[in-house]
Amino acid sequence: MLKKALMVAALGIATTSAFAVDVERVEKSIPLKDGSTVYIFKDGKMGMEDKLGRAVRMKQGEVMETKDGQKIMMHGDEVMRLDSVLHKDHRN
Image (cartoon, rainbow, N blue to C red; front, top):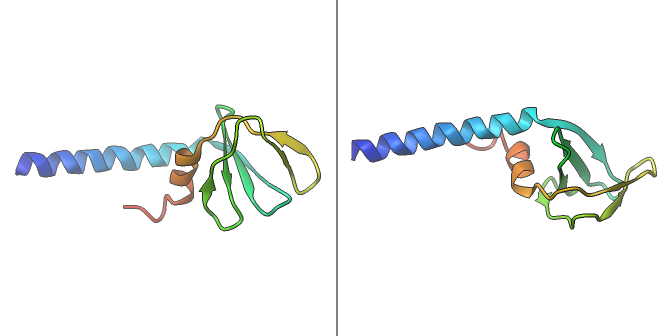
């Protein structure tokens, strides 16, 4: 029983530290015309947050329009990675 408890605690610490690393890997965020936001990670992959604050799926290569009228193309679909960034303060 003690071994199981220690294993669960160790996994929890490893998961928490993985979330902290992703927050530091966000290079910039770009607001889009429709109210959503695209996050670009330092490795060039992207994740999208809708206007309600949820990480959402995007198709690879889909073109999006920024608030200032520029067009950008989606590279990667980092939904889970972005979700961990968006909710880093809400998880134990």
